[in-house]
Length: 133
Image 1 (cartoon, rainbow, N blue to C red):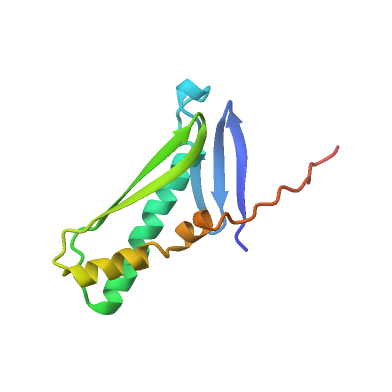
Image 2: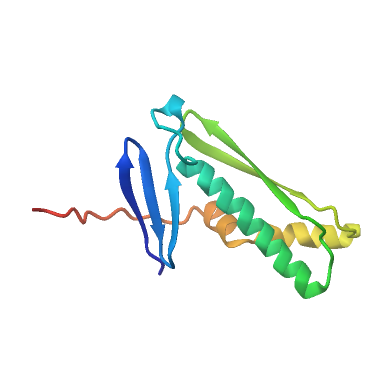
């Protein structure tokens, strides 16, 4: 397990600590009542999907000895109101891959851990651990 903790800074702005010494600032845009001090939670999820897809594709290509060039992964997030309802992932691969290699790369990219978690509707449990004084 990895521990992630969000602590309110002010308004909807949160400092998020991720086990291993990493920190992020997460907030909502101004039009949603935030101060726009960082990306929103769903935009951060889109960023995680883009990065995970890129890393998964790069790891596979490295093992195969394929040159991906400067791979870019784009994620477009569809919304209904404040709720993210879809994620569209596009790989921009300037490397010289043939059609068969590209098809295989797309298949592997769709198996990244973040994609799997989103597509499988990974269970999330909310537990009451309120500090009572």
